[in-house]
Figure 1 (cartoon, one colour):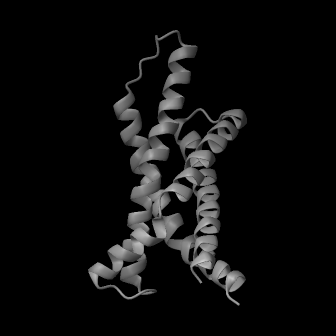
Figure 2 (cartoon, one colour):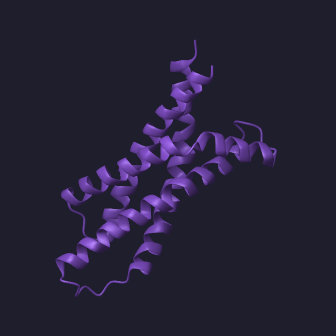
Length: 156
């Protein structure tokens, strides 16, 4: 049973990582006002690598489950889903957003020879707010759907 839960956890990390990466890379590049297919693809690939690594290294399911149990929320209730979505979002989104904004900032500064009138912190905070909202909605909607699929697939 423990091995099945590890498989489910790995598969969940991959699925959520790819979904979050695709949507947050799209959101980030569209909200920057400078969408390019190459920029989006590059953002998606880097973001996917980061998010899948997070999914493999950080036991998101265990953390969210423990916190929700300590809060007294029964599994599958709306309170549990709201809290677990928030925790997952806090784990994934800030790091992914930071790296993506840092890459975009570095590329713009390099292309402008350091002359671009940009400040990293406002860029990051603006993107973080947008990506945090999008990430929360994605996790809230898709995490239970993916879990249902995976439980069905890996249960005997």
